[in-house]
Length: 495
Image 1: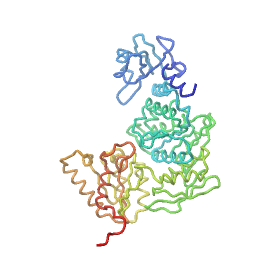
Image 2: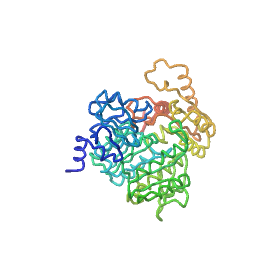
Image 3: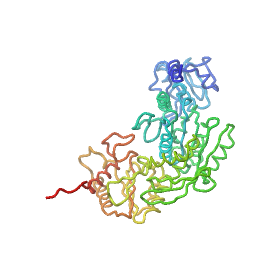
């Protein structure tokens, strides 16, 4: 019997809670066999095990009565609740139990692959796809789960999915394992870490790009946010490796990794000589950058399209992961250069115009500040930002305004309705925003730079977005195509 056959069998038989959650205390029964789980009482089916979790919708402990009425075969909770005689399992953390059971019911597919988990305040998506490019260049079968979509080893177009849900995450890991993937690169958000989504997933490699100030609306305080990010170390398998920024921002995390009771190694990346992998800028402009990648006494130049310093740092992290998995530096450099950039993340939008135009989708003020800081240093003329109002809300209005005021000469915020293809009667705000964008782009020159902040998808058909869907990058792309039509190729016919 193959590992995958055993996994499919486990999915059909269910799992015994006392084996998966050994810290459980049972009431109204000696154990519980779970064949399906849910944390939504309204969707509970006969035979499901209901897990009482605290979610954004409320406290699941208050929904136990409804779950029992709908036929729940058992309940997992953190405190005593009435179950009308149905078995009850008390656990320290229902989030952890829910995620652990989701993976167990899927057959623990992560154990059949080498899992690479990447987290941080910014740079997760870029690092994930650069890592996948490096590993794929070496001929490995790589799956990717990221904000840009989920990709199995055979596919070419990522599929959008909410893999932050532990059950969806487990199903994707099972799909990748069944498809023969040897490695899977997972972008891990603070939301996933807060929900304990990696419970029971042994990670061969964990990478932390940085930890700044972000998402305090979800996690309350900076200390709580850092504590949640630090949970990534709990997923490191025995013999695993932590890859982290070594320029001083993650000293506490590195010190904690050194104290783990597992055999864990560390690789540091950065721009200073003390790091295990280092980058030194050779040339950088709005047309791209070349940096010297140094590791273990060997140095090689790397040329990439994205010009910002943060991209070089993300490339360093991907290179360190490649070294961790035994790849030669030459092959790593080939993978980085083959990628050049990542779709929707500081991606150049070139329709033959003189002014450099980039598309980005920063998820926090931390990411936006890093990008604008680099662009300001490289821009000899005016630096302008055109942003989708929804992207501004994602970053945070105050953080957006502060960053733009500090580094930019001009900005335009477009209302979401301006991108609506079905809006046959645009309002005054839509017309005013488009007119402002038209003026900004018409007056931009070669020494200027324009950053477009919008949907993570690229201007054309891209990961996670249907062909033809409206987005700010598509609007800007359309304007550039109209303003810079392709020049005819070949000789002009004689009259």
